[in-house]
Image (cartoon, rainbow, N blue to C red; front, side, top):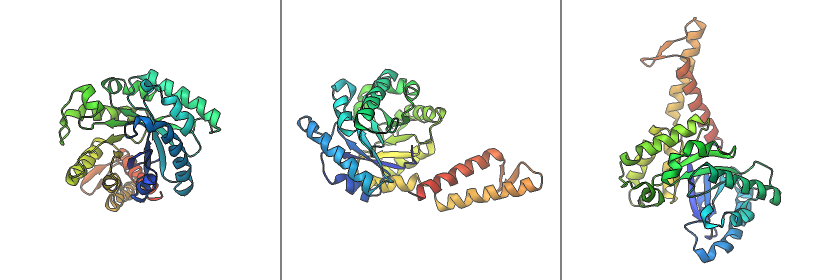
Length: 296
């Protein structure tokens, strides 16, 4: 998965909205076929989404293009993939998954429609949204169920599927979901993946809350945020982007360590701190992340 600070949901049937999402600066667009699309419009929306994928792939090749499918239990997942598993699609989000078997089923459907639609095998990623108690309980095995699985999206939205399934009462501080979010980060990193995602901040009138939501989740280890409104894209992009000051600090750390090595030292003092190779590895990771995001 490419470095992704922000992913913005766009209702699949809203033509032109994906282009607005790109203009807002999002790193990735999620074209929604599920909850934001009325039932009687889903069939027609699939073709709109397929066209949008092709348009975005041509006009904005650096922007990730994902589709939130209808859940397996709806019986429509295959119909969705038949239409949208096309060249230019980065990945899919299969909602309301309950365990590894669901991921295997989605993987098999993608295999089939990649071949049928002439897409290079293994091209389409799976981002797993965690929005059920069972999903959180099995997130490690779900992530390991297919080589397509790129990361987990830890859903913590107020009054949505996840809060109903688990029974927590949402607070802006997020203490009630701290374990859930921590488990998702740990599962992603233990699986060797780099970009755990979190969301959503639903209060469109509370920008201060959105900033704190992003910052607190960055501190926890998340690398990006899923959003439902363009105004949150800039927040996510700023929070999850290493600053120039951080880059300078970590480059200075690397320089100090390398100078120490020339003197036969494997540990040195830097800015009043003891540093060794472990700290330098972190420094290099931050600098590499900054370079990758800046080049997008």
